[in-house]
Image 1: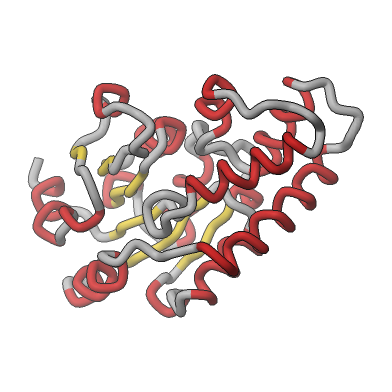
Image 2: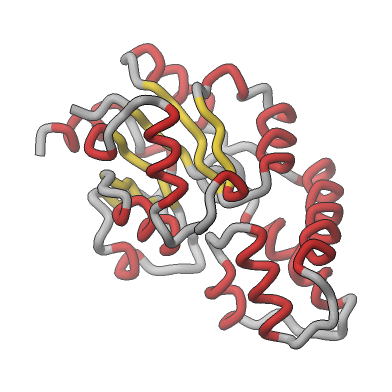
Amino acid sequence: MISTVIFDMDGVMIDSEPLWEKTERILLARRNIDYSPDYRDKIVGLNQRDSGRLLVDTFNLDETVDEIINERISILTSIYEEELEVIPALAPLLEQLEDEGYRLAVASSSPLRVVNFVLDMFSLHDHFLAVVSGESVGNGKPHPDIYIHTAERLGATPAECVAIEDSINGLRSAKGAGMYCIAIPDKRLTAEQFKSADVILDSLEELTPETIKSLGKT
């Protein structure tokens, strides 16, 4: 039976993927580099260190990964303050899941300071028993480490957990950890790419406690 629901943050809880893309475009434009769809597909769902390394290696930049990360986060948080919106269905869903007795957590590839920035911005901290970032584990998504670590933090087995994801890397991470996964695919991707998910939804509004209960019966 499923006891724990673990949310990815970007693209699931907040409408942030366009803002990450805007950040990346600004970051690359400062270096006279165009942001391409191929590069976008590689970077979505990666943690900051892996995505920073990808940027440095792909474009042969004479900068450290830490320098890239710090600049990127500075750009991102400035944009967030002006433009970020929470997914409207999130707060009611969190309350419904809590009423049903589910334990809730966040497992995000974003740095912890960005995750906390968002949770503070929308007063969401109290809903989650654990908040885990990509910095907490050695290998980021698509490796399963972050989901395994989050389950351990809550004293749950992977089989008792369902992850809510919007990226292919996140889906691979959750399934690799042995969890159920409900996918709400990034609109720039196709549902066919998420065929290994246990459930595919068009939006968070479609997710209910009954959806999760049905998984635990399979």
